[in-house]
Length: 564
Image (cartoon, rainbow, N blue to C red):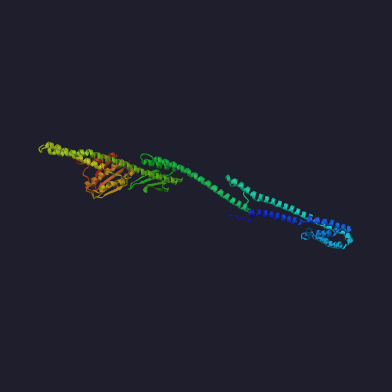
């Protein structure tokens, strides 16, 4: 709250200056009044001095019987009643001068009567005393005039001394109450400018503006000291954050480098987890990727602490839930933005991994479709032409040529078998699966097969898509398709089950079971090659294919092969 000003510096200096002005006005006024009162003193002294001469002139006129006596009497009367002498009756003239003037007037009236009545001796006898009175009167006027000049000089000297004293007091007041506090504040401001807030204490007890200014300056200095300390602390915190951010950028760069490869695979994600685990000193970090079905693939780095709390962060891409990133912290805290950025990188990596797998799978499917078109346009046309020619040949051979008929029948049987096998290959090669996710690919595979039968086909997929690469997935899907087709055509089953799950030793296992009649023999009849093709595909996967009759009825086709 702002301190109130009890005694303003401006009002104090204004009062002093007003006092100087008033003193100057008073002294000037007194001097002017004195000068105004003295304006007729010289004239009065001159006229009074002339009265002596006129008095003697009148005595001379009496002794010489001058014709100018009356004129001189009239002139004397005008002189003694002159306006300059009448001013003596003003209030500022001393009473004794007024009395002496009045005495001269009264005595002149008597002497005038004597002059006009011809009493020459009386006038001449009184002339000496009268002139003496005139001299006393002139001397009194002179003394009073000198007194006024002395008073004027004294007033001027006193006014000068008082004015000088007031000026010196104003100077002293300005230096002690204005300049000195301002100098201390300037010094304090220099201290603050250099970052030192322990300056000399300012005088905040003055009841004027400078006291308020000193109080505000002191408050500002203390607030600046607090702000300076707060800013220094924030700068230190920002420096630490920038250091952590720089270290985090290095970690993110290493993570991006680990995923910047032509083929994003499991080893890339393991390297990312290793980088984050080592840089953040985590106890353990776990990546769990979720497929559309029940399949999961989990990657861990570190050792789990049973007493430590897990922290989780969902992995999403284009609002699709891909899995979760989990970790356990050690003693040092984890930079949250770093973990969030790592999760975004992993999400994109998982997305690219699936996109790459889908792309490779599409390439394989397109290649197989191309092969199917080539087979259809070349080999299939040739076989069809041979069958037509063989039919024509049968018609032209005589009925009694049994040897030729046997050869033609063998040739017809071999040609039919080749044509059937070609149709199977074309059907296999024309299989189109666009999904990289194993569960969705199986659904896409089973949907058209389900349309061919009323037997329900049930799917259970607990195998992660990451466990198979694109080529493995294509071969596995072909085996499943062939096994399900065989069950539909030959099993006479009520249900068909397709199951995909990992084994205890880390392999992939695909099982196709039905509750039908059960397979009689694994030896295919002449002209059928489905089981052999399935076995060849299993060998290409580096696995084993077992086909057996179930004890409870039905057939079980089991494919076991290693992960990619």
